[in-house]
Structure formats: C-alpha cells, structure tokens
Image (cartoon, rainbow, N blue to C red; front, side, top):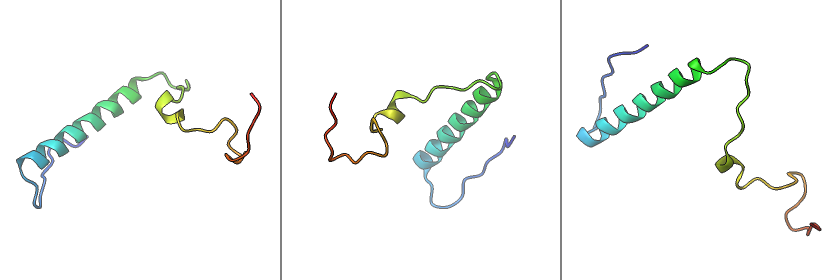
Length: 66
C-alpha cells in the first residue's frame, strides 16, 4: 500500500485536497471489496441499468406490444 504521495505540477490547495479525497475513496472501496465474501456476485446497481433497453438487440424505432 502506498502511504506517501507527492502531488506535483500546477495543483493548488483545492486541487491537491480533491486528489487526496479521491485517492482516499478509492482505497476505502478497495478495502471494502477485499473484505467482501469471495465467490458471491453482486447485483448491478439500478443507475447502471436505467438506460438499458428491454431487448438489447431490437432497434428502438420498432414498437413492441406490452
């Protein structure tokens, strides 16, 4: 695990803080994923399925009876 990170370039205090928050969030998610039971599948979140068509191979301009 990386403990010391040096941010170089034109990053000011705000940008450096934002980068630190993002890196912290990534490390939290990785720790949570490593603690999860192995071999179990997680359902796909609803926000990822929101724009998914009912039948992925059917053109959207064809009306389907419901």
